[in-house]
Image 1 (spheres, helix red, strand yellow):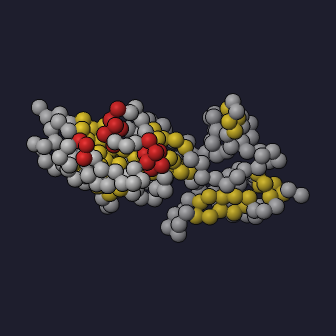
Image 2 (tube, one colour):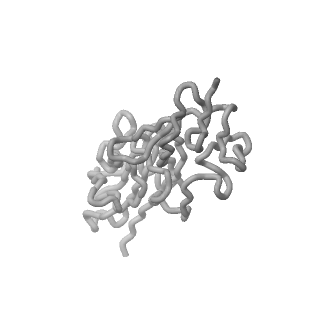
Image 3 (cartoon, rainbow, N blue to C red):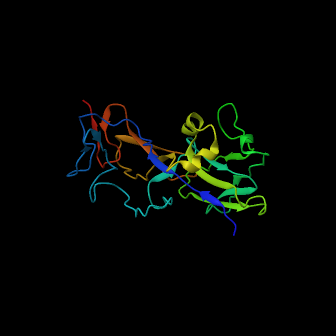
Length: 231
Protein backbone atom coordinates (compact mmCIF):
# COMPACT_ATOMS: atom_id res chain seq x y z
CA UNK A 1 0.00 0.00 0.00
CA UNK A 2 1.45 3.29 -0.99
CA UNK A 3 2.14 5.78 1.74
CA UNK A 4 2.32 9.44 0.97
CA UNK A 5 2.21 12.02 3.69
CA UNK A 6 0.69 15.22 2.43
CA UNK A 7 0.47 17.83 5.08
CA UNK A 8 -1.28 21.03 4.14
CA UNK A 9 -0.96 23.48 6.96
CA UNK A 10 -1.73 27.13 7.27
CA UNK A 11 -2.67 29.54 9.97
CA UNK A 12 -4.04 32.86 8.92
CA UNK A 13 -3.16 36.10 10.58
CA UNK A 14 -5.02 39.22 9.69
CA UNK A 15 -3.46 42.20 7.97
CA UNK A 16 -5.83 45.15 8.07
CA UNK A 17 -5.12 47.14 4.93
CA UNK A 18 -6.77 50.31 6.18
CA UNK A 19 -5.86 53.95 6.44
CA UNK A 20 -5.32 55.34 9.93
CA UNK A 21 -8.52 55.90 11.88
CA UNK A 22 -9.10 58.81 14.23
CA UNK A 23 -7.97 58.13 17.79
CA UNK A 24 -10.77 59.83 19.69
CA UNK A 25 -12.88 62.40 17.88
CA UNK A 26 -15.12 60.13 15.84
CA UNK A 27 -16.56 56.68 16.64
CA UNK A 28 -14.58 53.72 15.31
CA UNK A 29 -17.11 51.04 16.21
CA UNK A 30 -20.67 50.66 15.01
CA UNK A 31 -23.22 52.38 17.25
CA UNK A 32 -24.15 50.19 20.20
CA UNK A 33 -21.19 47.85 19.69
CA UNK A 34 -18.08 47.44 21.87
CA UNK A 35 -15.01 49.09 20.40
CA UNK A 36 -12.43 47.21 22.44
CA UNK A 37 -11.51 43.69 23.46
CA UNK A 38 -9.08 43.99 26.34
CA UNK A 39 -6.36 46.34 25.15
CA UNK A 40 -7.15 45.84 21.46
CA UNK A 41 -9.21 48.43 19.58
CA UNK A 42 -11.76 46.91 17.19
CA UNK A 43 -12.87 49.43 14.53
CA UNK A 44 -15.82 48.87 12.23
CA UNK A 45 -16.18 47.05 9.82
CA UNK A 46 -14.75 44.56 12.32
CA UNK A 47 -16.68 43.70 15.46
CA UNK A 48 -17.25 41.13 18.18
CA UNK A 49 -21.03 40.77 18.30
CA UNK A 50 -24.02 40.14 16.08
CA UNK A 51 -24.57 42.94 13.54
CA UNK A 52 -21.40 44.64 14.76
CA UNK A 53 -19.33 43.80 11.71
CA UNK A 54 -19.92 44.00 7.98
CA UNK A 55 -20.36 41.21 5.45
CA UNK A 56 -21.12 38.26 7.70
CA UNK A 57 -20.10 34.91 6.28
CA UNK A 58 -20.04 31.36 7.51
CA UNK A 59 -16.79 30.41 9.17
CA UNK A 60 -16.54 26.71 8.54
CA UNK A 61 -12.84 26.36 9.26
CA UNK A 62 -11.93 25.96 5.59
CA UNK A 63 -9.62 28.06 3.44
CA UNK A 64 -12.44 29.42 1.32
CA UNK A 65 -12.95 33.13 1.95
CA UNK A 66 -15.60 33.57 -0.74
CA UNK A 67 -18.31 35.95 0.43
CA UNK A 68 -16.05 37.63 2.96
CA UNK A 69 -14.10 40.90 2.65
CA UNK A 70 -10.80 39.01 3.00
CA UNK A 71 -8.26 37.90 0.41
CA UNK A 72 -4.93 36.11 0.65
CA UNK A 73 -2.31 38.80 0.19
CA UNK A 74 -0.31 38.22 -2.98
CA UNK A 75 2.36 40.65 -1.73
CA UNK A 76 2.99 38.89 1.58
CA UNK A 77 2.32 35.22 0.85
CA UNK A 78 3.95 32.59 -1.35
CA UNK A 79 2.96 29.05 -2.36
CA UNK A 80 5.63 26.56 -1.20
CA UNK A 81 5.83 22.89 -2.12
CA UNK A 82 8.30 20.40 -0.68
CA UNK A 83 9.03 16.94 -1.98
CA UNK A 84 10.11 15.19 -5.14
CA UNK A 85 8.44 13.60 -8.14
CA UNK A 86 5.27 15.59 -7.64
CA UNK A 87 3.30 18.39 -9.21
CA UNK A 88 2.02 20.89 -6.66
CA UNK A 89 -0.57 23.39 -7.72
CA UNK A 90 -3.53 25.42 -6.56
CA UNK A 91 -6.87 24.21 -7.86
CA UNK A 92 -10.19 25.98 -7.85
CA UNK A 93 -8.91 29.06 -9.70
CA UNK A 94 -9.66 27.89 -13.22
CA UNK A 95 -8.89 28.71 -15.97
CA UNK A 96 -5.56 29.50 -14.32
CA UNK A 97 -3.15 26.73 -13.38
CA UNK A 98 -0.70 27.95 -10.78
CA UNK A 99 1.91 25.91 -8.96
CA UNK A 100 5.36 24.42 -9.37
CA UNK A 101 7.22 21.12 -9.83
CA UNK A 102 10.21 20.49 -7.53
CA UNK A 103 13.10 18.64 -9.12
CA UNK A 104 14.76 15.73 -7.34
CA UNK A 105 18.04 15.62 -5.50
CA UNK A 106 19.80 12.39 -4.62
CA UNK A 107 19.37 12.88 -0.90
CA UNK A 108 17.32 14.84 1.58
CA UNK A 109 20.37 17.03 2.18
CA UNK A 110 20.12 18.21 -1.40
CA UNK A 111 17.22 20.50 -0.55
CA UNK A 112 18.31 23.80 -2.02
CA UNK A 113 17.41 27.25 -0.79
CA UNK A 114 18.47 30.52 -2.31
CA UNK A 115 20.43 33.13 -0.36
CA UNK A 116 17.16 34.66 0.86
CA UNK A 117 16.05 31.24 2.18
CA UNK A 118 13.42 30.82 -0.52
CA UNK A 119 13.11 27.60 -2.51
CA UNK A 120 15.31 27.27 -5.58
CA UNK A 121 13.44 24.34 -7.14
CA UNK A 122 15.40 21.28 -5.95
CA UNK A 123 13.18 19.27 -3.61
CA UNK A 124 11.45 22.56 -2.85
CA UNK A 125 9.73 24.99 -5.19
CA UNK A 126 7.66 28.12 -4.93
CA UNK A 127 5.10 30.07 -6.93
CA UNK A 128 3.44 33.45 -6.65
CA UNK A 129 -0.29 33.61 -5.99
CA UNK A 130 -2.79 35.71 -7.94
CA UNK A 131 -4.18 38.95 -6.57
CA UNK A 132 -7.54 38.88 -4.80
CA UNK A 133 -7.24 35.12 -4.16
CA UNK A 134 -10.00 33.91 -1.84
CA UNK A 135 -9.70 30.12 -2.15
CA UNK A 136 -6.62 28.11 -1.24
CA UNK A 137 -7.15 24.55 -2.45
CA UNK A 138 -3.77 22.84 -2.92
CA UNK A 139 -3.30 19.59 -4.80
CA UNK A 140 -0.34 17.22 -5.00
CA UNK A 141 -0.08 14.82 -7.94
CA UNK A 142 2.80 12.30 -8.04
CA UNK A 143 4.76 12.16 -11.28
CA UNK A 144 6.64 8.97 -10.41
CA UNK A 145 4.70 6.55 -8.21
CA UNK A 146 7.61 4.17 -7.62
CA UNK A 147 9.99 6.85 -6.37
CA UNK A 148 7.37 8.73 -4.42
CA UNK A 149 5.93 6.00 -2.23
CA UNK A 150 7.72 6.79 1.00
CA UNK A 151 8.50 10.44 0.41
CA UNK A 152 6.86 13.25 2.31
CA UNK A 153 5.16 15.80 0.12
CA UNK A 154 3.62 19.01 1.35
CA UNK A 155 2.20 22.28 0.11
CA UNK A 156 1.52 25.45 2.09
CA UNK A 157 0.50 29.04 1.62
CA UNK A 158 2.83 30.95 3.91
CA UNK A 159 4.03 34.41 4.81
CA UNK A 160 7.18 34.74 2.69
CA UNK A 161 9.00 36.86 5.29
CA UNK A 162 8.33 34.33 8.04
CA UNK A 163 9.42 31.45 5.82
CA UNK A 164 12.68 33.15 4.84
CA UNK A 165 13.48 33.96 8.48
CA UNK A 166 12.45 30.71 10.17
CA UNK A 167 12.81 27.80 7.76
CA UNK A 168 16.16 26.41 6.62
CA UNK A 169 14.78 22.98 5.68
CA UNK A 170 11.33 22.99 4.02
CA UNK A 171 10.75 19.39 5.15
CA UNK A 172 10.65 20.73 8.71
CA UNK A 173 7.23 22.16 7.87
CA UNK A 174 5.72 18.68 8.27
CA UNK A 175 6.42 18.85 12.01
CA UNK A 176 4.69 22.21 12.52
CA UNK A 177 1.08 22.51 13.58
CA UNK A 178 0.63 25.59 11.43
CA UNK A 179 2.39 28.26 9.44
CA UNK A 180 1.34 31.92 9.27
CA UNK A 181 -0.25 33.52 6.24
CA UNK A 182 -1.40 37.09 5.77
CA UNK A 183 -4.88 38.23 4.81
CA UNK A 184 -5.70 41.48 3.10
CA UNK A 185 -9.01 43.17 3.67
CA UNK A 186 -11.16 45.15 1.24
CA UNK A 187 -14.84 46.05 1.00
CA UNK A 188 -17.34 47.68 -1.31
CA UNK A 189 -18.34 51.21 -0.30
CA UNK A 190 -20.96 53.35 -2.02
CA UNK A 191 -21.79 56.51 -0.10
CA UNK A 192 -21.71 58.60 -3.27
CA UNK A 193 -23.13 61.78 -1.72
CA UNK A 194 -20.62 61.92 1.12
CA UNK A 195 -17.72 64.27 0.28
CA UNK A 196 -15.85 63.74 3.55
CA UNK A 197 -13.95 60.66 2.37
CA UNK A 198 -12.60 59.00 -0.75
CA UNK A 199 -11.91 55.46 -1.93
CA UNK A 200 -9.38 54.02 -4.32
CA UNK A 201 -9.54 50.74 -6.18
CA UNK A 202 -6.81 48.12 -6.08
CA UNK A 203 -6.88 47.98 -9.88
CA UNK A 204 -9.06 49.03 -12.77
CA UNK A 205 -10.88 45.68 -12.88
CA UNK A 206 -11.72 45.49 -9.19
CA UNK A 207 -14.82 46.88 -7.51
CA UNK A 208 -13.17 46.58 -4.13
CA UNK A 209 -11.74 49.75 -2.63
CA UNK A 210 -9.79 51.11 0.30
CA UNK A 211 -11.08 54.32 1.84
CA UNK A 212 -9.81 57.21 3.95
CA UNK A 213 -11.11 60.51 5.30
CA UNK A 214 -10.08 63.58 3.33
CA UNK A 215 -7.61 66.01 4.97
CA UNK A 216 -9.58 68.15 7.40
CA UNK A 217 -11.79 65.23 8.36
CA UNK A 218 -11.20 62.40 10.78
CA UNK A 219 -12.97 59.24 11.81
CA UNK A 220 -13.94 55.93 10.25
CA UNK A 221 -14.73 56.13 6.51
CA UNK A 222 -16.42 52.73 6.60
CA UNK A 223 -19.22 54.03 8.81
CA UNK A 224 -21.92 56.12 7.14
CA UNK A 225 -21.18 59.76 8.03
CA UNK A 226 -18.16 58.42 9.87
CA UNK A 227 -15.73 61.18 8.79
CA UNK A 228 -16.24 64.37 10.81
CA UNK A 229 -14.74 67.81 10.23
CA UNK A 230 -11.86 68.67 12.55
CA UNK A 231 -12.74 72.33 12.81
